[in-house]
Amino acid sequence: MDKFTTLTGVAAPLPITNVDTDMIIPKQYLKTIARTGLGAGLFSEMRFKEDGSENPHFVLNKPAYRKATILVAEDNFGCGSSREHAPWALLDYGIRCVISTSFADIFYNNCFQNGILPAKVSPEDLKKLMDDASRGANATLTVDLERQEIKGPDGGVVKFEIAEFNKHCLLNGLDAIGLTLVKSDKIKSFEDKHNTHAWA
Image 1 (cartoon, rainbow, N blue to C red):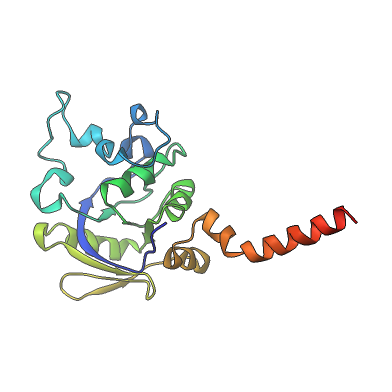
Image 2: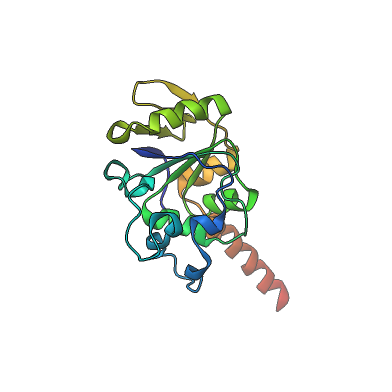
């Protein structure tokens, strides 16, 4: 898993409450267990018309936001089913950070397992960041995980919440497997002792 330290990038505004995982990646894309290729289906029911052409009104289809790496969304982002394909699709598209006032628990935890930072901010700060993200080509934010700060294009700074354990894992690029491998020496030592006693 890639480390997350500091991210500077274009932030796309998504002023929608209760964005669920089916909106993020619709069910027809769930046939795969591969983590790649899902970016094409990200928000597909909003990004594309029925004939497959792009919806020019959806934010990620606008020229200024095509390479967005940050999403600024309303309350309760990632609600609905527990599909891990949702963070996979965001990551495959290039989104490394989602900013909101609240996230669904399972989606929130899945983000940390995939190198995405779900940053919780206050309603007042979300309003400021949504305004910043609405500036088109000038909608650049800098997210500093170590300082737990988000800097806007005018230099304004807001703080975000994150548990120390989750912060440690993102800074060091550790998912559940990575956390286990960090203790591989202790695991091997335990197994060696266990095997010695088992045959004694």
